[in-house]
Structures are given as C-alpha cells and as structure tokens.
Image (cartoon, rainbow, N blue to C red; front, side, top):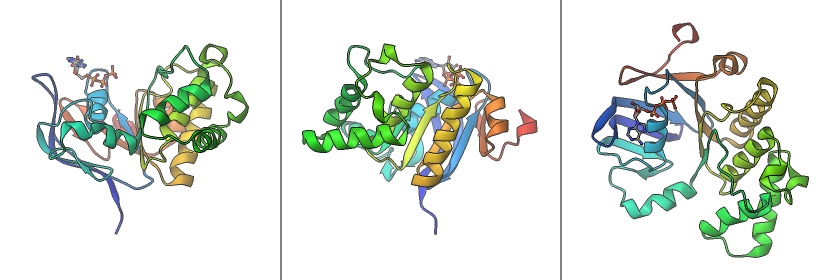
Length: 229
Ligand SMILES: Nc1ncnc2c1ncn2[C@@H]1O[C@H](COP(=O)(O)OP(=O)(O)OP(=O)(O)O)[C@@H](O)[C@H]1O
C-alpha cells in the first residue's frame, strides 16, 4: 500500500468568509510530483496555504504529513510546519544575515540547539542544492536562481516528506527556471519527497511533465491534461 502524504476529502477553502474552492478531493502519494495549475485568482495559493496551516480548515477532512488539520489544535501548526517545507516565488530570505545564518535561524526556530549539528545540517542542505561554498554570502550577493536554491535548502532543513512550492520559477529567467525544476525533480525522485507546485508556467510543465491538478471555477479538477489548459 502506498503512503498518502496529502489526503483531502470534501474540503472547502475560504479566504475570510469568501468560499474560494469547494468540495476538494485529492490524494498525493510519497515522492509524487504534482503541478497545481489554473488561472490567476482561482485559488492555488489559498489551497497551499490551507495545507500548511496558514488558512484555517473549516469544512472537510484534510490529512497532511500525518496531521489531521480538522482535529488539530491551532497551536500545533508549528509542528506541522516542521514536517513540510514551503518554497515561495519571492524567496523570502532575511536580508540582514548571510545564507548560513538564514538557515540556522530556521533550525533554531524549529527546536535545534546543538551548534555542531546545525552547522552540519546547513552544509548538508547547501550541498544538496549545489551551494556548498556560498554559506557566507549575503542574500543580495546572490543571483535570483541562487536565492531560490537557498529557499529550497531552507525547505529541506527538517527532511520533509512534502514540499509545497508556490510559483517557485515565477521570478526567474527560462534557463534558471530549468535548473530549479531539475533540482526539484531530483529532490522528489531521489529523496522521495512529495512536491506540490503551483504554477502558471506551461513552458516549464511541457519541459518537465508530471501529474496535473487544476483549479477552475471554484473546483479542483484532477487528471487535468495539458491540452485542456
Ligand atoms: N488575503 C486575502 N484576503 C482576502 N481574499 C483573498 C486573499 N488572498 C487571496 N484572496 C482571494 O482569494 C481568491 C483566490 O486567490 P489565490 O491567491 O488563492 O489564487 P491563485 O490561483 O493563487 O492566484 P495567483 O496565480 O494570482 O497567485 C481570489 O479571489 C483572491 O482575490
């Protein structure tokens, strides 16, 4: 039997009192790569936010990396976040500290204490994203692609079973987008990390085909094929 990393049953997604997505059913298995596609404003980010506990789940059943979001005490959200990684379009690095300290900041915030273990972990994730020698650089000294790699390294810190990526190639040129996609596919394939990636970018999808799920008119449509979009 395969392990479901995400299982959604009849969930409704709200922004405030506004119902954004209705009756969403979705299963994502260990190591699966899934694109979340759909026009702007159709609810891709809202769905991802629900999955990482940024929007409260009001209706339906939702299990993410073993956490039942319906029954979960709101105070447990930090524990949920320790078990998944989130990658954003705009990198969201702390601009006042170098790459090592950006990563250590997250480790400390998620309960790590031993300096030596933290140093080893930081080196390990930087190695995984091909930035082993860049730990002492400030974010402004890095290219957009390198900053996105640091963002991905940050998502890998707690060895998550799931990465949620919201338009991770949105700010990158085509060549750099390809490099980031190769990295994400490598992570999914070689470490068994499930990845759900929201994107508008059909050039990327064509080059790196994977399962697609589409947001449209308040619904999530599974098995969307590329010629439908
Ligand atoms: N913070 C918010 N408060 C209220 N409504 C919001 C908020 N964020 C998004 N919305 C609304 O929720 C709906 C879905 O937005 P969402 O950002 O999830 O769509 P999206 O598919 O991710 O769009 P994009 O591709 O442009 O990022 C839109 O109608 C949007 O206006």
